[in-house]
Image (cartoon, rainbow, N blue to C red; front, top):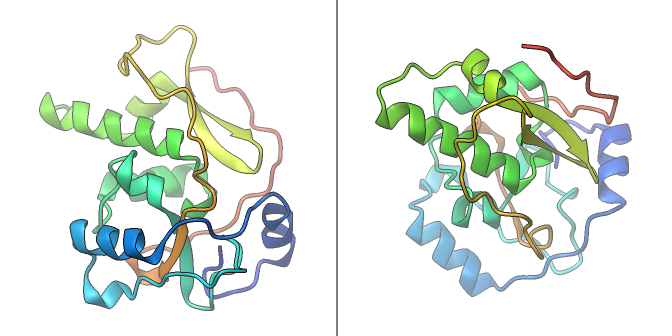
Length: 185
């Protein structure tokens, strides 16, 4: 989960609960081809004993479920970059359910020709932290827009890969697990 710089505290904390690689190189190769990763992304299949915290210098960790179930795509959208910048966490710290919620909100706004803003997203969702990853939960008073959200993702942490950090064109920082203040909108 490196950005090319060592973040000892955050990386060690997060690597504690991360399992080693558990998916095939064939599945990885199919993903790279099916999602048309640019050659410049230099997506790499990890070694057998590596965990998601072992990204080489200049690379970041992404998870298969971001693409397969969360509809994440490269190049990344401006709105997604704004989400990362506002909430100040590294993409590799995002839970796939959070990815589903961000991308669903983005699709909904685009289909209805509504301007995408982080403030609009915040009206519906509150960030939360659980088991080393950040996600978004629906606000109690907000209208439900994702009618059948996934309840959980099983075995998603071992399906990771490394990709050149430049696919996310911004400086990301690892966020510590400090308490998240409940925002009132």
